[in-house]
Image 1 (cartoon, one colour):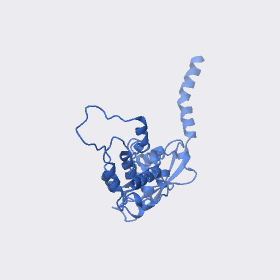
Image 2: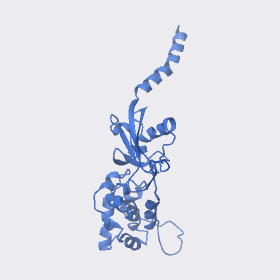
Image 3: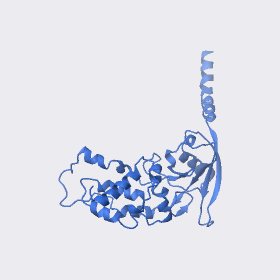
Image 4: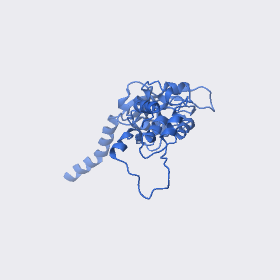
Length: 259
């Protein structure tokens, strides 16, 4: 009897486990703004209904749709851990990383809207043309510039000097801040918050010698003075960078020439 009971329990275990797992699933609807230039010039909203664990992420839901329902759904993603920044999109009207947004945190009892970030040309579905964004990033020279010969040892820096620009080293170039900016929506020539943040990271680096040059770049008509301090960028940053503060510090450095 003992052996029979054990065998019965063993065989029932996986079934119970599957039932318990299924009991955690909820039915959600993702309302995705689709765009395919080969089919139509106008985007259209499409609903997808699926069962998913509420503790899973929006990225998991998108994967489920692409792998099991509609393989034509197009979006970017890579690391799926909030580091690569490639899956930034508008979820329920806010810029977020799909891999960091849990289903349970965004009102799954109503349709969850998913669309491409604003201000950049949509190529297909949730994929936008990132070239203008990365061009602005390159334009601010986001690398250490020093004079003289290559060093034979590391360039020393105090903890205090390092802390001065610590916040802006966290940028993952997801474009969530830039594509949340109303100025950028209306004028794609504006450098945008992300480029200014990455300029800040080197302007205030005590080892760098090109601060003045970067400030002159940002003093341009499409530079830092276009910022209207709406705080959208700070709210949108998935890394918690105080973007608006960094922009104000660059403005102050332009006025005082102290950095």
